[in-house]
Length: 141
Image 1 (spheres, rainbow, N blue to C red):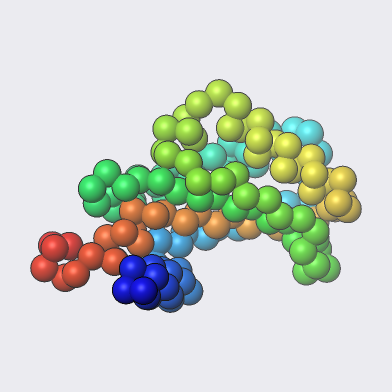
Image 2: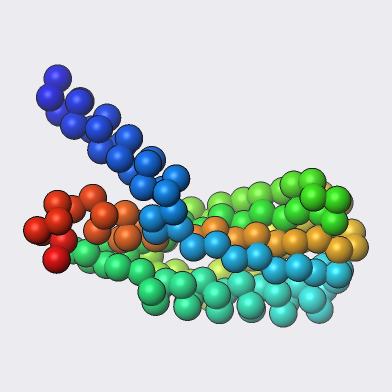
């Protein structure tokens, strides 16, 4: 019973911290067209931003996992598609193939109707920042 209560309390605290923006990094990029050439350049920009943002996160006890979510909004403001790349360690974003996953998302955005102008939104959740915020003040110092 006590273990269940502690898990529920921890879950509520994590939810509250995320809603307050702890560990959350966001960025958006406008585009006029997601043609093939622009997709590659934009994927490089997104990946560069992710790498830079990961460099600013805390890593208490070696907790360094991140979750990346991408979304595409059309020129009319309507959300066209979204996808999450899952929970990964930072080195994942330096491996071959990760840029291809971002490019695949852009391909899906075009298939969903992102013709013309729009916006790509990325949200990175740094789990180390949340772990750090969960620590009692004396232990987190």
